Image 1: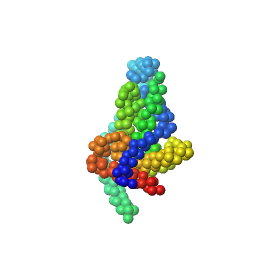
Image 2: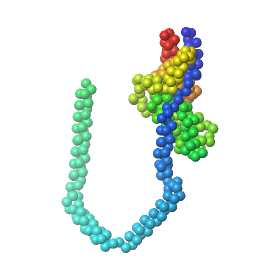
Image 3: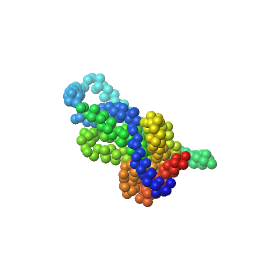
Image 4: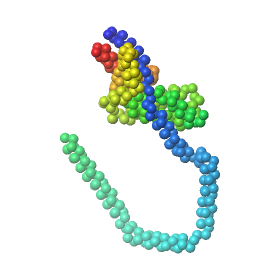
Length: 136
Length: 176
């Protein structure tokens, strides 16, 4: 066939090519995805929630604020005791840190960094050696 | 009509157009369906403004094209070397071919179209994508070069090579 004719025929065939049809599964997939997407859209901001949700959440929030205020203004006895115990534990920990840990902390830090570097170098060397061997 | 019903009607109206653009650009039906779903999810997010816009078809085509090009560049490393012929065989066109078996000329024409569609999808990405953008999306060489980040010369040569491969299909069929 003449090359010009062939070109024209290809143009014509491409132009006449019917549009492929979407598979039947596409529409259900899209609709299912939009249904799943709706709750996420609703969760984007309080102002976009339904009015009833907003009213209920506002009441719950107010209750939480009032409860927190009552709790802080008159702390129960158990809480006071727990706070004293926590203070004692903190004092012991501070003494332990000042007397025992702090003098050697800098040495331990340097040692840790050195060990990490040594491990990284050893790993890189091992990987280079094994990788090279496997490629061969 | 509720928003959900309007969106369903919207998807029904444009799904073939979006899918056709995607499947010709990507060459694979499964990927095209994924991209088409993403396109419609984007449309869903701004459905109120899109539904009343006269440029909605253009918007859908642009988003589809961009998503397909992103998809191709993202999955370049695992491009398929063998086309999925079975998926093309399961297209409604095949059913029509079977139905039209009593009309030899029509059957011949449909078979030629099916073969061309298959050959188009079998082209390597770097030939198929510019060819589809040029012939089906009616983009200029310049616009294709800009979209793909390549020179106009490269666009022309890739389209030319793609056309040569398709012509080969036409002549090989004609010689049978």
